[in-house]
Length: 326
Image (tube, rainbow, N blue to C red; front, side, top):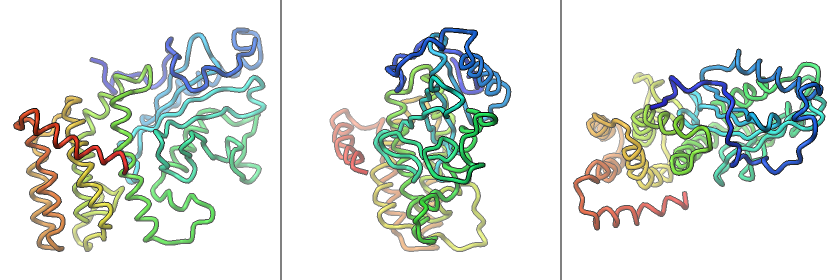
């Protein structure tokens, strides 16, 4: 079975049927190998093929060289960690005079001030946001690789709350924003597992099989206040517990069992997770109130799903549908 260790970072695909920009106007240049635009895009392919980092994957299309799809894996140390962020791309007929256009697969969630629910991506390099001249698209120097690296570093960052230009400096608001970002990043995993973008089906399934344990363990650490959201495996026990909002805990109680079951059905190995939650629960009780222990008792029911009868499972899943309002 194909997995992310075998999944090529750059490759040519044939199925472009679900691409957001499939209906965009096609110019004669896209099939004319002698045109300047055609040659420029082929050069872009070579740059990506040789320079993509481990956390970015790209597919281009043999029949539509003006289209491209990319996925960025959320980085550790950010509230986006272990999430998958897909972008559909189209090159204009006068490329590189004007920058490419991007569509972000948001699934209806606002996860960043620069990423809109309608798919719009605000970035100076794309000329969709103001910026100094050197930050905007330069036909003589700018590349698609720079666009992807900019999104990874400047958009999907450690404290996305401060990407909002009018944001009043507030670490409290930043922490609250990160809580919501992490929750919605987890929720979008359901959508991706249910309907993965074409040509990335195996990649999505394998990614969440491999990262399921870490994602669920991070959920426990964040809800318990052992570490701030985004900093799973970065904690230092010399420092006090982190304040966690009641809203985050309540939403996690609803999210966790459903997330666990989705990962289990996807084939993830989750052995030892129940024991880890139990330890976190006991530590939380000595350092804080017993709120997290009560949460864990509800969360641990997820591990008994396979022992339930079909009617009981239906009842649990029915209650968990309220997650759609998260």
